[in-house]
Length: 129
Image 1 (cartoon, rainbow, N blue to C red):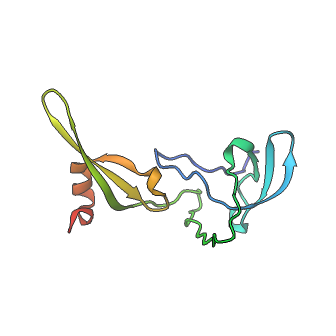
Image 2 (cartoon, rainbow, N blue to C red):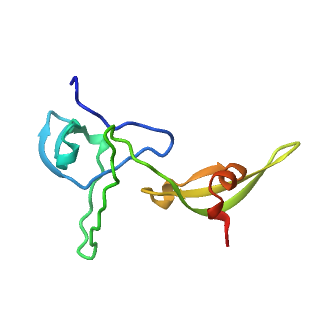
């Protein structure tokens, strides 16, 4: 396994699913070998069954899959796309405003709560209306 790259877990919005990919063969009782893209040739292509998601076939489902642009170290750049909702959390002596932020390469259910002050400072374009 020396020299084989793996997907790097970075922060709370790590890249979970990068497929769909074809299953080539079953390895052991709980492993599956996948047919990955040529640019992912350095990644070990056998995955444990819990790391895979079942694809449910639907005739009306047109699969438009655009894989994220992976860099050499198998990381990718993510940026905030929009603010979904706001919330104010009240403590005894202070009030803390939070915003739920939708990120690039992630669905709405993977959005994260961030401090509103930090988001206004780093990405003011999200709050322009």
